[in-house]
Image (cartoon, rainbow, N blue to C red; front, side, top):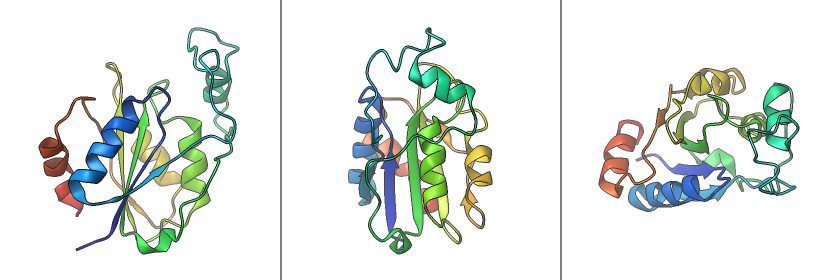
Length: 158
């Protein structure tokens, strides 16, 4: 059996609750991808082109700093990476996370929460940042997905 990690970034708490449920259901370690500078409500105002999140998402080279690191990433075979969909893709802080570790010979499984937007090309974007990793296309999951549903979905990689 492979050792797994559920790493997630959550702006509003929706992705956090889903990630916690997933980790508990599959017996995975849990890691919150926290920005060094927390996002405020104004930062997250996607309707304001000058908000922090809008500026970050318009600059594909933007890499927001992460507050802490995963201890001993080498111990994990499968890494589930959760995030809210921003502008039809993963938030820039996920790109920071992907570049911070050696994911070679690991399976990376993106999962996202959204009010309706698809996960888009997040899997391909993340694969480009993780040479040698097997990065799946990922899936947008319902915020209220049951533990049983999450375990069934995750079982393909465990």
